[in-house]
Amino acid sequence: MTDQSEQFHEHISRQSKGGRDTRSRDAILAADHWSKLRSNSYSETMQVTLLRQADQFFRFCIDRGLNDIKVEDVMDFDPYSSPSSLQRLRDTLRALYGLQHPITHVIDHARRKKCRAHRLKTGRSGLRRAMQKQAKLSVPSSELPATWQNILDELQSGQRIRRRKCAPSIAKNMRSYARQLIWSARNAGLPDEISIATLGAYDADLTARGLRPSSCTMQFGFIGQLAFFLRLDDDLQEAIKEVAGHYRRSVHDVPPMRQARFAQLPAISTLFEIAYDLLDMGLLEDHSTMRATYLVDAGAIAFLTLIPLRSADTVLRWGEHLTVNVDSPDDWRYRIDSSISKTSVDFGGDLHPILNTFLEALLLQGRHEAFLPRLRAEAIANCDPVFPKSSGRARSALNLSRRWRARLGTGSHIARTQAHTLLGALGPKGVNSALNLCAQRSFETRRHYQDASLHLTLMSESQERLSATLPIELIAERMKGSKINLA
Figure (tube, one colour):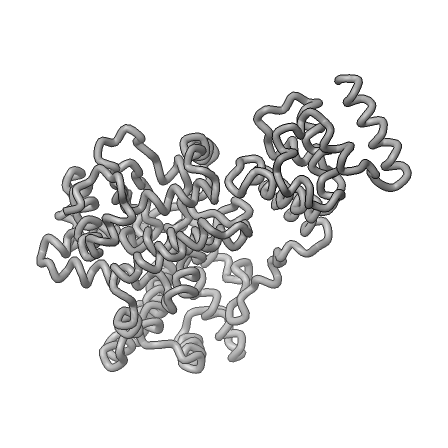
């Protein structure tokens, strides 16, 4: 440490004992490390208290020889004050260096980290206790009959029962509706069992809640599957099938909500225009939370329009689900490889280049594009979420669908209907592309996907067909310098 630095720290220590740093603006700007910033008009006009804080940070970094400043370094500089102190430092350095300077993002990351710690310490974390999360219309899983719990646990772990096995998500749904059935039984003063009486109580509750016939069909279908695995009486299983069949026949008498929502959904060209508008707003936004929201909303609309995943499969991570080939000759540089939760089927392929801008904006979060290789490598190494919160943590499985609803008035599941409708109009090959893009593999269509090369081809073709509905002018404007053929 230099003599000048020792004198400075001694002075700061002495002043802190008295209450505060009292150095003048001229004394601060006279230091060598301000030589390139003295001409900045903000150095002469900012509050002296902000100037002192910035100078303390500069000297902290100089004394430790910090060239590549990390979040931990910022936390060490200001370990005891409230998060607002780092917010003031961030805003000061933004004024001095500009919004895209990397140090402002490092300080903002440290500020968010301190905010989380502060909320946890003060009890304002927003975390709800398990009892608060308990559904009002179902009993806890632990209160299901022990036999049911054991069978459901075995099914969820992938074991066969009665020579059958099911996907973990199916077992999870059976457990969920079993909890609701037991709640209805207890509410009616009936024992914890599946019987004609408890099924009647359950049916009455579903009707009172105003569930549509399609939902009732699904719920009684899962209860019927549970009855099979529990080896219940054949007559009782047949009764459950009759109830499910009744609701299934009633489905045709009620206009599907999905059709009404699809009719209100804008065309793909309009969806991408909305996505690009949100992207532009995010790139101009300097508030980190608002910027993250804009960029995630833009990415969610664009990504799920071309890759209409189920909500449960939207928690994607770099390195685990998304990878990159920087040497790709035609801009198809990003690739998705995942497993569909509902069917456990592998799903993957290259992503259309029109998604590159959205994915990279989510990585950069307002930084200069020169930092993209480094940030992308770090995201892959750390398995960071592709659609992060402003805190950097992953969003919930339902969050992207909620962001669709906030911007478009309907959840993202409608994108699957859109893909089926638009691609289905192209004939058998379009239907195959839609099934592949939506990761659906029913018994009837399974034969179309025996060849992995066909799977990859359809993955690319389906995205191209959907993106072909976009105006050429929009693509040309937004994908300048792209290596793909825009004609």
